[in-house]
Image (tube, rainbow, N blue to C red):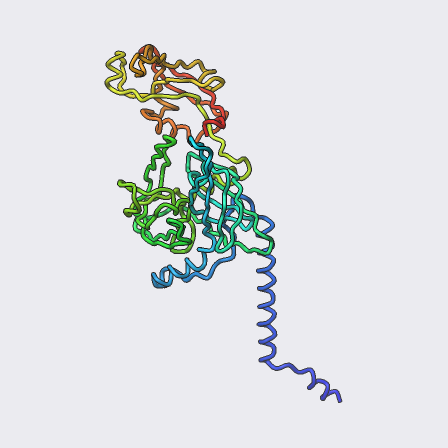
Length: 396
């Protein structure tokens, strides 16, 4: 009897291996579930578009170019939205609405969307189309300096959003493949491909008279309606926000497009969501660049610098005692300089000859920091300490 009982509980070697494999697989599943729960509970606004489930995209070094294009489009195009902005304009015949359109990238499962400032500028109503569904959009925050904005939609709880993964704009190379997804001329979720044609391009905005530094240049076709959409790398990661095209005749794309580097967006997204704006330092002056003609007219010992033509009340410049020029208009309406103001020569030792130079000199500063200005006053050089304040709402 004892021998028969022993035979009943005998387990073969194959069974032992099978049990071990099943146990190992169960352990892996438990670890994955626990890790995902930990990631979701510890996400912060600084990690938008990161820590998400990997999408099945083949290694671009072994996949064909066509396969790579198809996989990225299928995986991420549902996360690219069409934004319609409605603006009411006053005319002689009354108030009438006008519409504009652009694109955006869903950067969080909660419904936050990254787009361009000029896509939502002045809008009184935002409509966001996600695939075949439309939602009302709420403006969360704007940054005119970098032409970026964050809006938000409130989809139903059972509506799963496709999130665009935010990569990095560090280490990009000219010649690297890129893909752009957007809604040019209202054509939903259009894909174009190309390469990075240039890096660190200054992008001038004539409307705001500001410059976006470090823009990515691409030959991927970008047209009106693409603004705010993602520029992706071959892994499907967003490396830029499509912003502008060079179009000398005011038409469509001629193969020169520009995107704001995604690292700029990643740096300011948390502040846009928490504050609605980006806190930046403010000197509190308006200036005009000195040229050789102006230098000769006022017998200045320098040919370069920024003449202060206005100082805002309550600013750090006013508190430091800086002086502005005295301006007047002649009978023909031209502005005449009656008295020179202080001429700013350097900021913390950095030479400034234009408004862009001044902006760049302050970009790493914070409100409350003190800077040293070298100024020319009545042909004498002086160093003035100025405490920077926060840029007021009307200057943002």
